[in-house]
Length: 380
Ligand SMILES: CCCCC/C=C\C/C=C\CCCCCCCC(=O)SCCNC(=O)CCNC(=O)[C@H](O)C(C)(C)COP(=O)(O)OP(=O)(O)OC[C@H]1O[C@@H](n2cnc3c(N)ncnc32)[C@H](O)[C@@H]1OP(=O)(O)O
Ligand SMILES: CCCCCCCCCCCCCCCCCC(=O)OC[C@@H](O)COP(=O)(O)O
Image 1 (tube, rainbow, N blue to C red):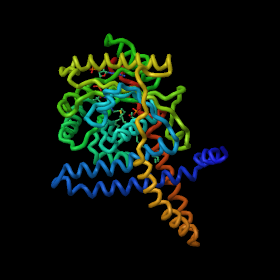
Image 2: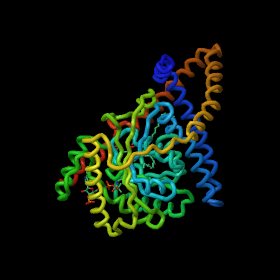
Image 3: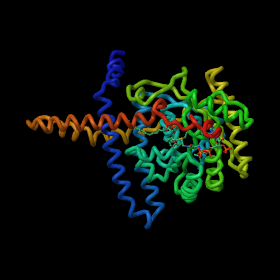
Image 4: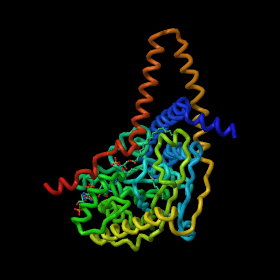
């Protein structure tokens, strides 16, 4: 009991956070560098280069999974039917997920890890994320599809990036947050005004989905991808988890509801496909309503087994990097030179600010204005 208390307090200590962040950053830069080294391989053996990059990418993203699973002890329950369960990880799929939480990407990655598709998982992500050190740079080599959330610009680039995935050598899940931005009350209100104008039923728990990205993805990955995984994520007890909470060792419980829908049943024609997606979001809204009322999703519940690889990868980097860090810091601080000591402190401070900025990328209150003004634009 006392030991548990000490561990809990330890997890809230700034020094622990600095060490975790330091390991993440340095290992991330090393992996980014190794990814850069694979560039000459691409024209010679593209498939091999892709496979190597999947494993290198895994080494970065699995650290955040390890943080969630092992450091914070967060649990993930999956509501799905057993028939579909047996196909997860064995086919390519488009994942349609609600976008309400700051750590929904970590919960998504955790499920990917449990089904063995973490290294190869893909997403249609906003362009701004490609500039985030370590993760954004890693994504460039993993052929993540970036969009500017401006259809005129995106229609060409996104189609090309999607087509590139048609001969991808590993099974992948392609994540789409069709709402295009994270849920806020203001964005919800505006998007429901758009829904009203378009004569669409109102949604209570979701923003009105943007349909073009979904249509483009379905159109270009048809034949490569066999199913849409309609996924709805919630955290128990109305928690709104944060990355800082996870870093502080706070335990959450994620509930994920996944429905497997064969891709053949998604219409090909654009307006029919858009109508299909709007209907899907109305159903997703009903599942959320069910969850709010009963505290669970419909169907059987499972906990896909947690694998040790994310933790082992993390421990590997900790063992490799922590000792040299302490030695270097000690050497610098004991150098006897005031300017060296000052520079060391300034450098550490700058790195901490950088890390805080990266964490800020996950925070809803620092989110974009996308979805806040469309109605005014349409009215002009
Ligand atoms: C099973 C477990 C999970 C597994 C996880 C798997 C993989 C994990 C992998 C990685 C994890 C990392 C996660 C990182 C997450 C990062 C996610 C993001 O960055 S989300 C943001 C980027 N993505 C998207 O935006 C996708 C959805 N968007 C679209 O599809 C858009 O259509 C677009 C292609 C981006 C184009 O954008 P644009 O703004 O130009 O949109 P539209 O043309 O659609 O907009 C005009 C259209 O919309 C109507 N409108 C106006 N205002 C609104 C409003 N507020 N809400 C809704 N609609 C609005 C407007 O009237 C126009 O209508 P119409 O089309 O009829 O003319
Ligand atoms: C072991 C790990 C140590 C942790 C150290 C800190 C690392 C910080 C990691 C930062 C990771 C950044 C990845 C960002 C993924 C965030 C995805 C996201 O949710 O983006 C928001 C967009 O979808 C929509 O944007 P908005 O329009 O809502 O704005």
